[in-house]
Image (cartoon, rainbow over all chains, first blue to last red; front, top):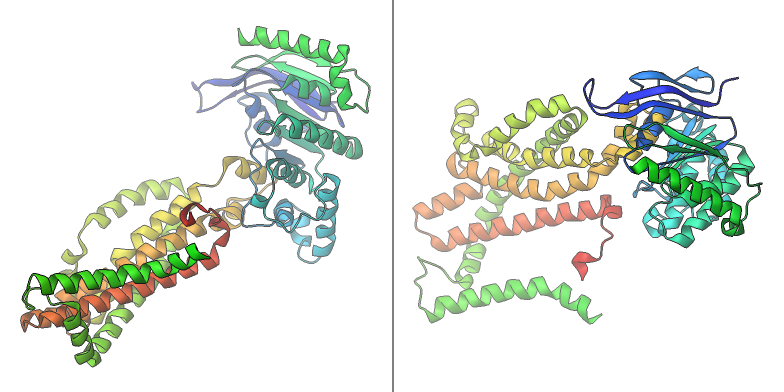
Length: 260
Length: 256
């Protein structure tokens, strides 16, 4: 059985042949329902990984498969969230959530007639991340953490099988970040969704992921793969345990090597 | 409360102050009225020549508005096209900049050659002078789509048209409405230029005739009429902008 997200010996070049290699010989396998994290020094091609796995870019060499088929167009079963919440300021929070449904089928053609059903779904999703009743506010009336929660909801509203997160908590303060770790942990536990999280934060990766990939400096490839065997459900307290510390320490040493 | 009252009164106070200083300067320095008439004489000219001023103002206003409406339609379409495709942008932009650099007063004789004098060249001059800022602003607005958001939507299978409709156009609207304030005043300038060179009617023509007859207060009355019309049209566009794109104007910066 192939993995849910499978990159095999993938190389990718920006700017055509002769351009700089972003990733080279990259192989990553993530199983269905698994929470994977990708860490690495900056500029290691993590964003390229995001684009390859969602079908926004196609590899120069190698094979990218999602859900058993080779990626040859935008995958549509993926939700994405980034460091910046990128909400539309002219839409209310609720309307922002409905945006993907206006794009992706089958919701696109159903949305107008089944509006109430979708609005109820969006409100339930907002409530599940602690934003119940905030749907009528505009994004700029929300705090940074609340905007990022909304951005996560927008990535989940069409019930994707795959969630790609590119440093989604990078711009938040430490306390809000840990709060959102728990939000994403609970969402994953409830929905059994496959998640790929790209991050700089080793504690974040260790707390959330089942499997961590350490990438090298550009051109990016996988230097090490580490399974996190801390039992779930994990509490924030676990981040102070010795085994947690040991994993973070081990990752840290890989990164030191990667930066060399 | 006190500060808001001050802000409301400020434009009136400043305007009245300008007229007071002008009047005082004319009297103190004994400036002859054929050189610089004092505001009292200008206002008197406004009252005396009201029917003529009214008729000519209305003409200038109508040619301005028709030219402006054309500029909005054409500018919006071209701006969207330029923002849509890099090839169109690369092809059209140098042409537009070159075209914009041509003083429109130099174009009026050609328009007269083609369309005769009067309404049509005034409308076309107003149009030609005012579409450029609309094009530039709409294209700029479209260029500000965040690449991450584009990725989010593209990964869901959004077409370019989808992204344009859901994100690009709403994002460009504040730029568009902002440009209307500039464009309408430019259109007005264009109409007056054309009237001064090639027309029997309009404020521009009225002022030219007044100059020929040495009716200096009437020239200034014409200027006053132009200023008032310009302010009214600008205010209308500013109101429209605030109404249509309130979400983009939540900064307290300008109010401080």
